[in-house]
Length: 221
Image 1: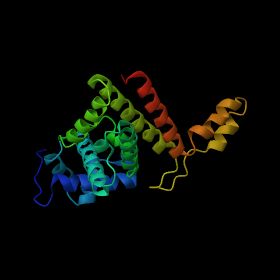
Image 2 (image 1 turned 60 degrees about the horizontal axis):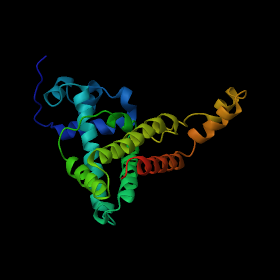
Image 3 (image 1 turned 90 degrees about the vertical axis):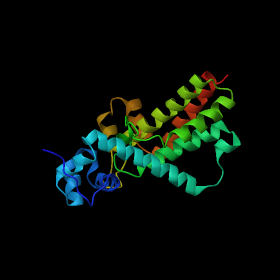
Image 4 (image 1 turned 180 degrees about the horizontal axis):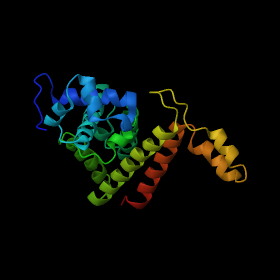
């Protein structure tokens, strides 16, 4: 079927509707047909703007990145990249990324593996890598350091959104006590669940600190 142009519809409207619908139904329920219904158009109208669902997910991730950048700029305040404090920059950026991913149901899954549709991310990445290289990292080491923390953050939030209470649908999250009962014969494994699946804020911070320490010990200088 030939995609039909819908005069009242543009890419930004489609992405905004898709992000709203994502929060209600999650990634599994996010179909082009459901988005078309949300916009009160026929599904073929969306193909004028996006060739398939992955193309839409790429644009959704890009829009999340744009909004994160805009919020960070609007917040102002101390900017670690201006001070040349690579550690503060490293931690602040990953905390900001996690907060943005948590704004949307399955936000980390949408973001994971996405290919940004424009180059608006490049200036920030370039500035961050410059701070690291000026602190003594080679470009290769700075890149590896940055990508390691980025991968940790996205991966952590994927697990967090799968296991923690879901603020979008009221799901109470993984039943840690029921897990402990099932693992009664394995007390260390049982207790580990209370560390892994509770207090995700503290868990993220401890893991991020470990990543930072490892990066400093193995990649700097």
